[in-house]
Structure formats: C-alpha cells, structure tokens
Amino acid sequence: MAVSEQEILEGLGKIVNEITGIPANEVTPEKSFVDDLDIDSLSMVEIAVAAQDEFGVEIPDDQLKNLKTVKDVINFINA
Image (cartoon, rainbow, N blue to C red; front, side):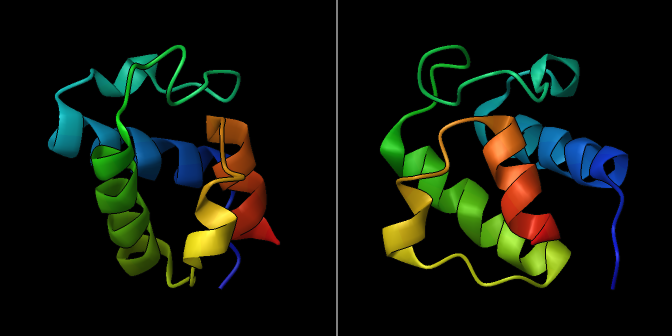
C-alpha cells in the first residue's frame, strides 16, 4: 500500500496530538521529536506502536532510536 508523504505526515500529526496533546500542525518534517517537540521516550514508543497500526509497518525497537525527526519516520514508512 503506497502512502504519500502528506498522508503519512497528517497521520503522524494526528497520532502525536492524540498521545501528547501537541497540535498536529506543529508536526512537520524538519521537527525533531525530542529537541523540537519535547516528546519523551515512553511517548515515542506509544507513537511508534500507533504508527505501526496506522500504516501497517513494523518498527523494530533497535530502529526506533534512529528515528529522530518526523522526516525520518516518513522515510522509514515509505521504505
């Protein structure tokens, strides 16, 4: 199932908003989850699980630590 970058971005924005309360429009490709959006590691795990369900991808724990920006997640899902 091919998903556009815009669809992934919108989906991630919704997921981040539901889990952290951060407005979805603040979730942009250049943002770092930790530095820019101030998301802690527990919330990142929740976001990863929700993204796996939403987009039908498997994000292994050892890969999660490499997904530092919103763009990293978009690229991972599109890979």
